[in-house]
Length: 222
Image 1 (cartoon, rainbow, N blue to C red):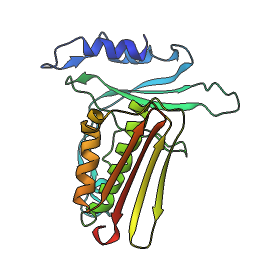
Image 2: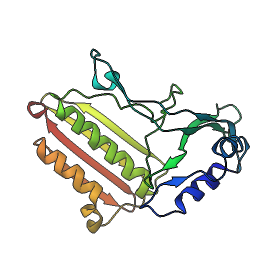
Image 3: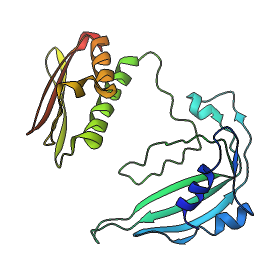
Image 4: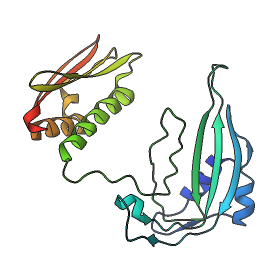
């Protein structure tokens, strides 16, 4: 059975009740290993036992202090063969709980160093006294997401420019652009609200040749 098959089986139940692996969980999990669709290969699929919540008294961050409780799950490790034979494979990890409450969770991906994000631990804690730096990060993530999801671009750039009195963020792409109505979407609204909170300015120039978004934030607000 493929990973997609297991996910489909899980989603076939009502979201109001828990979903369970069909048949013997260990057998179902082990059956995932092997070749999957197209260039996807499941390298291993093994059952992992439940782990209890553990909290230590001393640690540098909350994420380091708390070890979350996890139910029994099937740990699936695999890779996707790249089109370029000189490129490394794209490795992934999917954790499939034996019992699922009908909700879904997506927890990012690895970095360029090949680290796999498992989703089993807590995310690193961010300093509570530095919300503005986090807000700038969220703006950059929103701009990047909009380019990938909606622009249809083949080329894009994100620049961070340090000026004497303000920080400038420049996002450019060669996509199909968007209408004035599209600037009222949730993503752009989120960007605008964060820029307003930081006392900055935003300028959007969009057309058939692409989109350029320029954001200027004064240092005194960061």
